[in-house]
Image 1: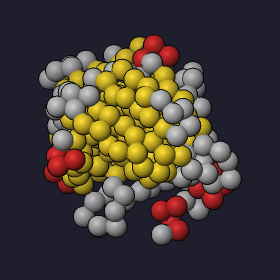
Image 2 (image 1 turned 90 degrees about the vertical axis):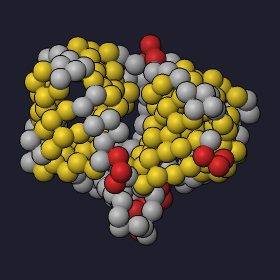
Image 3 (image 1 turned 180 degrees about the horizontal axis):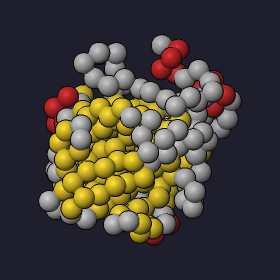
Amino acid sequence: MSVKIYPFKQQAPGEFNGGEILENRPVAMTHNPAYLQPYSNLFYWAHAWSEKGSTIGEHPHKAFEIVTFIIKGTIEHYDSANMKWIPIEEGGAQIIRAGSGISHSEKLNAGSHVFQIWFDPDVRNALQYPAAYNDYIQKDFPVNSNNGFNIRKYIGSGSPMEIKTPGVTASDVTFNSGSSKFTLNKNKISSIYLIEGAIKTSSGEMKENDFAVLKDADYFEFESADEGRFFIIENPVSVGYTTYAEMK
């Protein structure tokens, strides 16, 4: 089993509109070797937030599947397919299958936090298909309780979100205080972002906004003095095609 922890300060910082929107990127879209590079079919992961609210102007995308998870607060989304602003509340999500091309704009309302995560569905094939968009509200996603965890499944079995990128699952997980053991798929790479709380693992401590990558792991085991929350994405060890990151 391999576990690597990336503290908040080791993640790539960013901002928009003079700091009205801030972000940290545990998986960065940069060649700077100081930051974690894309792996498997996970190309980019950003946590963005805004204290007062701000809008990122309309800009284009192609090929990638771009999923935004609303961790806290509300956002509004506009794109060239729907030609209107769509509000999405906490617990909801949206997916842009950028395909042959789409433009969009997004507004983070005051106090909002989101994860925007890019998946590589095999971009060479994806470019051949028209762009598509779907949004979801919190109650669309199933929640299961298991071994002290409450698991909201965003991508994977039981979720209504359709994603063409193969072998991906994504869940928002809350946990109780004490000792915890979360089951993983040993045949996947597990990426974990600690949203709330502080935990101790055999590989070190994690605080809020820290990130961990686990390989060849059957479980994620930790201890916590308080309740907490993390977001987990699992990607295949081998995707079976050349990813965009490998082409660069």
